[in-house]
Length: 95
Image (cartoon, rainbow, N blue to C red):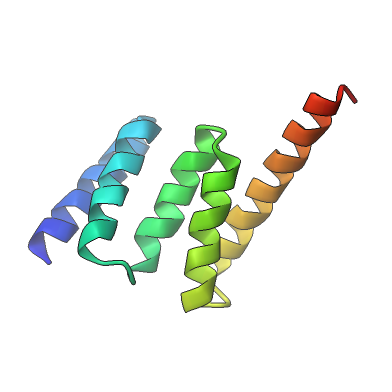
């Protein structure tokens, strides 16, 4: 559990510095230790949104919502992921 907290805090520090790829990697390491901790999924989803990885952000939010169906951060970030996916789809269509 101590390693989990350390990795999560390192991820949080990377987010504060705007280093989203590094933060996402730290949160991914956390998930290897605990797959049920929702905050690391919503945090990684935030990183993916900042990196324009909308599908990955949606997957993380979907995972959280299977565990906690009313998790506000997961609902909000999933909506942002859907919005990003729609914009990308329109851009590819040349609209």
